[in-house]
Length: 534
Image (tube, rainbow, N blue to C red; front, side, top):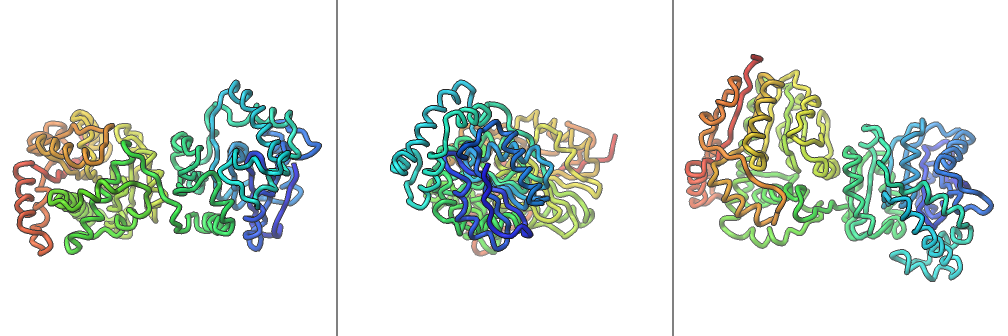
């Protein structure tokens, strides 16, 4: 390998892993902006070094660690890996004993390709990369998304040095079709797997999210593969400094989180948008600053919801969502009065910020949802002090072990149990009663007529096809008490049980609909107190 360095050895070190078809110097423009504060190390793989022979990834790592020993590098503040460089970087961080503070993957391929296909790909890749040297970069537009003059030298230099045997050996142990290596959970919290929404490699994002649920997964909206780094090295370097020093991305318009239609992740958008609209329409009744901010930070087509938001019934729907939040927050705060050090557990949290809004300065906050939702939440609503975001399936009660209920525990579930089978809710509630004696569970429910109506309006409007509503209840106390003798059950009206809605911003017709909702549709907030151990 060949090593280029920028900055002082006495500064915190940053290690770069470069993309396929270029040399390590491809990151020099970024390093120029970082060198006053960091020691930037830019190795070039032996694949692109004249007179060197690529052996395997382990040999590359040995060379890197030997360089560190020579330079007396004891730890790394940041690892930055681009494209296929992410494959080598993953192996390096998984096995090195050198402490690593943060990791940033810029458009990592993360492809898992069979051995036969990699053999077929190799000659095509070889001629593509060599053509950049033969034509002095004229074929770049046919290979990549751009042909910028300022990046051509790195492709030309790599193409000149490339030998077929080196590329063949690299492809034999790179992008293999096998599980991603395990990384420590604490390191993953400081790891960013960034993708451009326009790049072909975006298709690998879901697999990476499933492998590393505790990581961060920003999407640079409208950007192609490595485009931000190449087009704006100054902005990219400032972003890396923010990651290294603050463990957060700076506010930038391209860093939006893409939400696909017809996915479970999409279900978090509906109540988020409703909370935003209610905050705008009825500010004296409800205000959610986080919802207003977050709707601008996700990449989602709100046009269908926006078009319908002017209808009378849709506005009443916004009010329903807001009242649910107010009701649940009331019950949480009520529990914290007698249990100030309790755990507040938000089941199926989505992008709901109710835990922080009820924070008394002493309680512990847990937010639970599917891993793909938690990945988005980690970026948009990162866990604060005494707070933890947990990816899980609520029906798999292994998550019980994560909850510290020594000071008591109050669970809330907003709009969650409609998607559970009746038996699933029963099993979960009885298991919680056994595991968390003297705890409290609060959730919203409605009768079958109301649930069917919801399916025809909110869920249908979002065109969600992979979830269904099963759980319904009319008389919570009589229907649910039989589940377990430890359960003490009560309920209040969903719309008017906690608030008379006599604020001038709420018209009389909506108050009438609220009475219909509470009385005819049996929309209710159910509170279950868990008794002591049997």
